[in-house]
Image 1 (cartoon, rainbow, N blue to C red):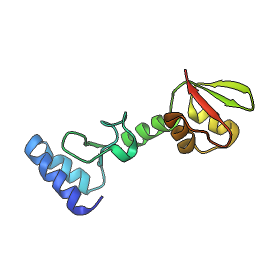
Image 2 (image 1 turned 90 degrees about the vertical axis):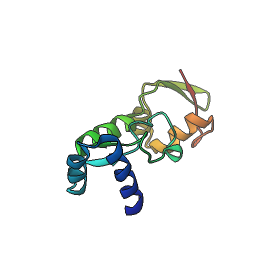
Image 3 (image 1 turned 135 degrees about the vertical axis):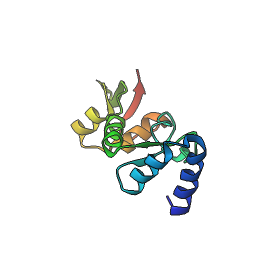
Image 4 (image 1 turned 90 degrees about the horizontal axis):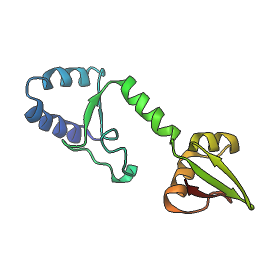
Length: 124
């Protein structure tokens, strides 16, 4: 994200948070806080997420890492089908670790009903 976009969002936050924004901006510029657009838009595909007053929040690195780790696990139950055999998994991470596959590619295949390296997926 460009400095101009970041500055525009922070200026917008100034109008919303008035008294607390000074502390947030100082911590943001010192690297203590990060501006995050993903937490409030977790249910959207990454390419649909935007930076705006309604969709962003300041978080610590630890909070951002925890959220990112939770999202990586992709905790959804699904059936993986390959060559007529079916297996049930509780998360994408569990499946991709077992078969040494890419989380993002499998997630895409599940969302879009496509195949990935011979595997077909069905949500449970």
